[in-house]
Amino acid sequence: MPAPDKLPASATLLVIDLQKAIDEPYWGPRNNPMCEANVAALLQRWRTTARPLYHIKHNSADPDSAYRAGHPGNAFKEEVRPYPHETVIAKHLQSAFVETNLETRLRRAGHTPLVITGVLTNNSVEATVRMGSNLGFDIYVVSDGCFAVEKRALNGRIFSADEVHALSLANMQGEYATVVDTEWVLERT
Image 1 (cartoon, one colour):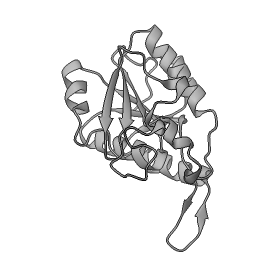
Image 2: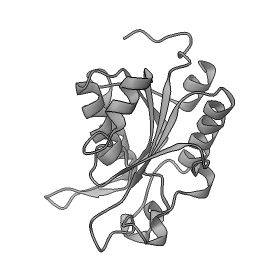
Image 3: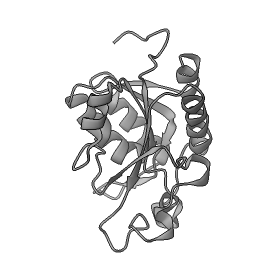
Image 4: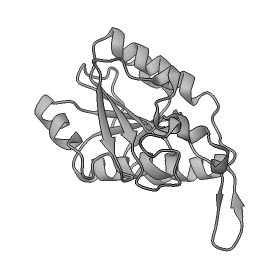
């Protein structure tokens, strides 16, 4: 898909799972320490231009997860927390489209294309992007508006957070989405 000069007023920002739980030590080292600041800049632009945005909140069913409802980690990170009038969609699986009303809301309101940020790049972000693409949405993934953590392969090899992030972005680029950065989005909104 050719890159547009401007994103339409209907371009919708999704902020996926940027909750305090992602800072728990058990996640291990992460990449992209500027993610939250970049998402905050995008949120500010969306708010000042009255564009549609959705905050996706993960409510884990796992009793050991910091993302479980009632745990302090379930709260949104301060720098990207929703305003009281903004839409929050709760999910309990990886994709923001599974067992939620996100697709219905987007279609009814004509909110497209989707500009996707959040965590983890290789988990909920990629799951949402793949499903959203399969549902027919045009999607932009903000590469510096998401991050990954290191991952151990089945053979014991540890892939750095940068490697995991880069591979996930490569998986999404082209077939499922267009990978861009914060500056690219801000120049077009």
